[in-house]
Length: 400
Image (cartoon, rainbow, N blue to C red; front, side, top):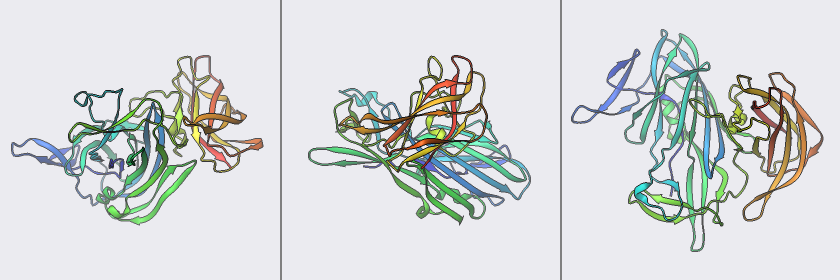
């Protein structure tokens, strides 16, 4: 079974009424009621570049995918606001965790995209949802003030990854994958100039680089996540087929390896929370900010490494400071393996990490390399701000 989920390339949202100078093609029923929107072709605005970063992370017992998508457009026409849309694919099958016995009448299927935000040059754009048609469950729509010339747009969102259930007579497992749908980007004028789709897999791995692409469905990107849920003792994961509300499988959750980012806490935001995954997306303007009850000291960020090799150091970019948020002064890096049926972390080595109170990248080389391990955990030990401040990390990368 499969959840067709995830990310889709940006396109124009369309419909039958003008809104901020852009035409929207509304789909109406026989009574004249608006039941959805459909895309339309644009002839003056081209996408020069698209950069996609996908970072899987753990929230509670759920595997989610944080997505950071950055676009650069060029407008050959006059400056104008235009209503733009980001579509969400329909997902027929969904997962739902609950305590046995589960009552299907009291369980609501989750959406594919949990949270969504859009901004231009750091300025948040109001986002609304419109019902979709055919393959699209709904559209996230927002008005972009396109200048004459170049405009930079960013979408941040959290989605449920695609998954496949593997069953036998004695066991069952759940394999996850990332999908990024490029073909909806064909609605912009001409070809996409260039683009990259990255996936965090112990480092930002480039799944796809393209140039002068007029995307079709054959260009959509899929990649397995190195995450498997296996049966073990613990809280069950019940899978439901919402076509008939029937429980058809029981898969207690266990991560087969440390392929997801984890954090002790993350500060909320009006759009997408300041997730630990934001320290790994390659975007220096996003950051993990903790939400510890007593401040940032003791809060931690756990990063998978897949035993890629010996670690010689880190490249760290502290996050921006603000009210109640300070730069990290000292962290403790712990390198560990996961062992046993419940994959308990076993510490192998640790290393102090000292940072200076300044913005920009800081390169820390360890006195001696740390051996290969499944994951590292960075625990905040001291901040430059007053007691009770929260810590912030914009970027973390390994030196191997």
